Length: 387
Image 1 (cartoon, rainbow, N blue to C red):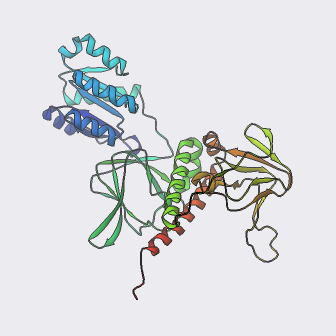
Image 2: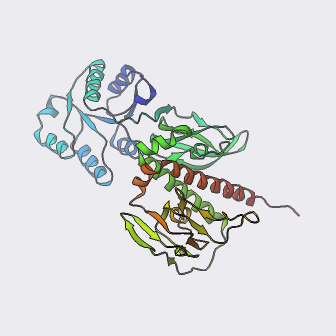
Image 3: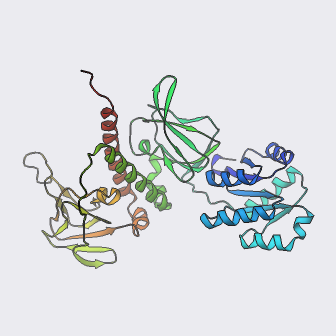
């Protein structure tokens, strides 16, 4: 079965013989993890997002634990492994039904029969697979990539944890952080960085969703949440790097950018020539995409006689970096001619990703370039000349 169909299975059981037999009987398309007590189950559901949980002989205390976990996050799909006594307990079955868990497999069951029934379950409840992305498994301790390696892939963690490090010397790694389910890493190579700037190592068995540079716009169009999460993460990273570089300033009252222009349709604004879009020092909860016309960013240097310096035309974003990072605007931006703009805010982000995936790729590439430039400045600022 191809990597894209890999199924992440969490078995909750205090029976080591059952756990060992299940692992041995699992075919290559299954990644079987085991939680042998409530503490391990809670930790596993914090660190992993399995495709399916098998709950073997669960108790009333386990129901309470799952109910508490469900209050914080949605529970993955689950199947009960119940003996005859458990099946007869109507109260226990009712409590699981209240959690949305309504299927069971009677125990005892041979491991091969267990996986035959799981195959039937996944035929009836197919896991949603994005055909433009693939799943890949990295075993605990295995590097996903190393520093200075070339690459064009970005990874989203489905389950497991990844350790991100910097190389100090041949024998020393400095930890930068640890990433868990739902987070991206390796995005700089996806957006055009020539080499990896860090090392990524699987801390546990890690299942990742892989996106390639060549298919970025297709993936963003099919799954806009991918583009939204990626560009928000870039904004957070850029803001964190800027905080490292910036000297502390006395608090200044924020000037909030108003939504200027005239309403020209749903989520669209019209500006007459010379009308302002943004003023220096303003912070905005939105930016624009130019649909028709052009705007000019004042104070942008260009070649002598370059009439296009600072000009932003159709299909381009205006004010995207301040919007995504919370930085204040540094330039005055005016309509160069009568201009229609699409208003991009947190509510219209998914629609815009699907509608303008190529533009989103350019926006992400621009932010990645800014991150690399600031990362170089942060690295150089850590060194001091010796007198």
